[in-house]
Length: 236
Image (cartoon, rainbow, N blue to C red; front, side, top):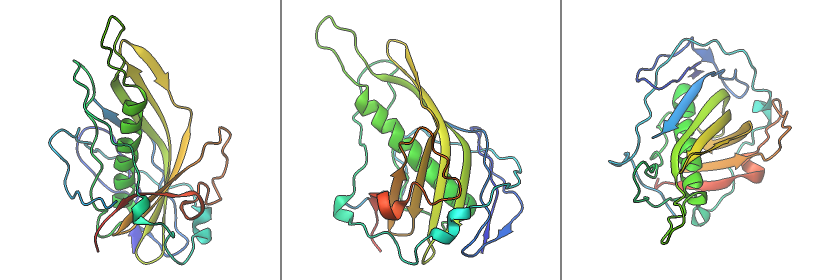
């Protein structure tokens, strides 16, 4: 099995870098400049009509970082309950220029490795943060007060790593920053964010660090086994 280097931007095509052999200890995917913008069991297999489609473009990118934490991955999947699945689910805002809620991707790809795993996790994280920002920043006034709602949201992936997990699963870490605009023109920015996902054919588990000075490149941190929350489950 191989992993592939990938570069993603907005405009629609996709091409892989040179394949890299992988088992338990793998090379990381070095992804720079990825920008995605937003203008229970979870069984959605396709995006709905109001989802903003994430196009991808690629450039050949040579991985330069070793996922040193690959050796820390346990031999069994994270112990999470599908009854505890939770993720932000925003409601539409009936105002001109307001962003629509973003749909989550459906079941992870059957071969959730390399490029496919990183693309899936990037889409999921964008939807998660987009909807979370909508929920946190929506206040439609009923009187003379000014409405508050999200009009722009972007994340820019600065780096990513992917490693083989147990039983045909993948563990993907993203390093990204983000920014957005709240009506009537309030701008905000994210500091660097680190998030790690465990994905397989039946579940998606998310863990995010809140450390501002995070330097855990060679440690499985944030760790989906220790600090992960189930964000999607699928029928077998």
